[in-house]
Length: 179
Image 1 (cartoon, one colour):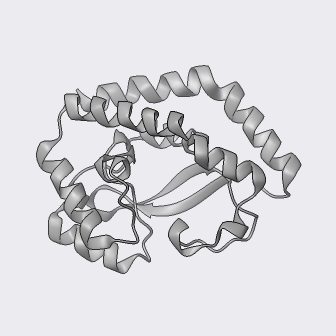
Image 2: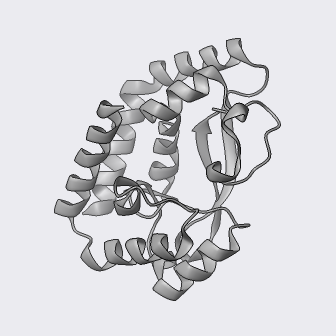
């Protein structure tokens, strides 16, 4: 059932919001040179690498590291807006449609985030698809705290249900609207 909901939701985002995604891409391109779309290799289910797609929020050429490892000065003005509203995540609807991601699950990590990978292995977190949002994100836990993140992601795995996913989605929207 979860996969069916993912397919319907991602298809709806792509069908109805593609003009907004293209407009945002144009605004990014007008502000800074370079591709307005950002692809980055992440680890998904069973530690399988895949390319995650986002709207670019940082200046072209910024190193591929975790957001918490890069200074705010790397962000563009448009990027600050996109991050605050989470609109930079819209292209991940394609990742969901392709089956690399789910709407809700642990955020996918970079292959270079050794501490996160080790902790997630201990918790068995790589057994499920990563998500656009998740329990850790709504609780303010990011990849700078690998052990706490993996425990929270493990808790999501144990408790996952359609009702929990709905609650996480609603809390995610609530957090975005409060910003």
